[in-house]
Image (cartoon, rainbow, N blue to C red; front, side):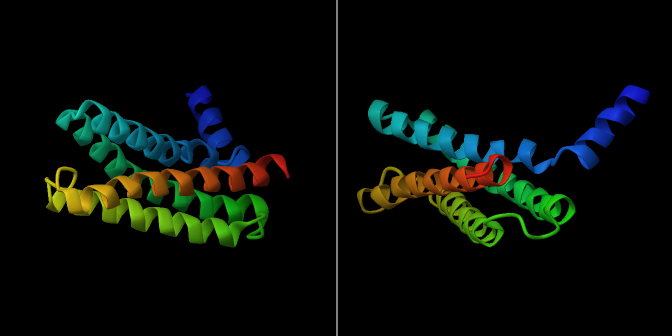
Length: 146
């Protein structure tokens, strides 16, 4: 039990938990982009469904990462971490765009197969991943400096 208590203390009081959680939206948006590109290449319905699942999970994980990010900014950086305003704005944009992409696809299962919507749908995956990469870079500045 002592080991579990020490691990919990380290995760909540010593190390910022945001650094653990932030990898989920980055990886999930990257995986979503990868699978949507594979779906285009292979003309595969299942790969498009995997991309949809990844973008949906990215939306949910963005909320968790944001909550821990705001908490860690207050606890570890006194509310003045470098670029924290830009990160909040970009994280909000990422959440909105991943959520809109997932809901649009959930409501219209043929979104990927309709010529008029396919380009916008695929472009959303690129933009989501680009925002996640910029957020990761700005987070790296907080942790490692510029």
